[in-house]
Amino acid sequence: MAEEEVMRVGRRVYVSNLAWKSSWQDLKDHFRSVGEVVYSNVIKDESGRSKGWGIVEFAQPEEAVAAISTLNGTDLGGRTILVREDREDRCQLQLLEAQAWRHPIVAQPLSSSTTAPRPPTSSRPSSGTSASTGFQYLVKWQG
Image (cartoon, rainbow, N blue to C red; front, side, top):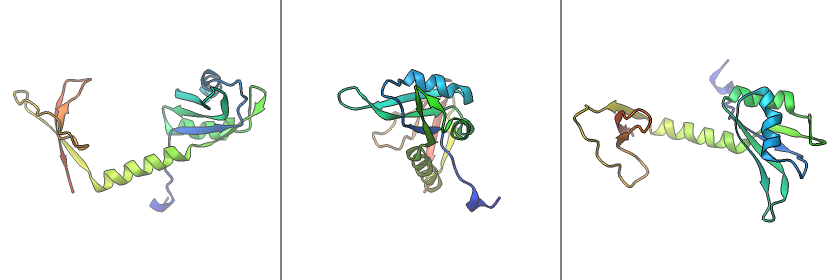
């Protein structure tokens, strides 16, 4: 498949035509059949009433594709739901890929005796310590 034919798919799906009584838990339970749901939300107005649509996020993009192909047109709460790719998720994915292309980073471990400097106040970190592993790293911005 040629490079220009590859389409990036996000992990989130947009679900519309929800019943007013549908909750995030209803969405999660319904979409659990196609993959691991990491987030679900029914969007509500200022009064707390459902707007009739929601977002479901999966652990893997393949699960989102499976949700679109198998759950679109199914019944949830007495209504036929519509499931499609969350376009906002795709836009964010494309933006991140474009930023990574323009500004690739290279991570280099620091020696154990080196103290990592405090990260600058700008949005571009230069160094730090991984919270999960305690591994110190130095990030060099290219370009």
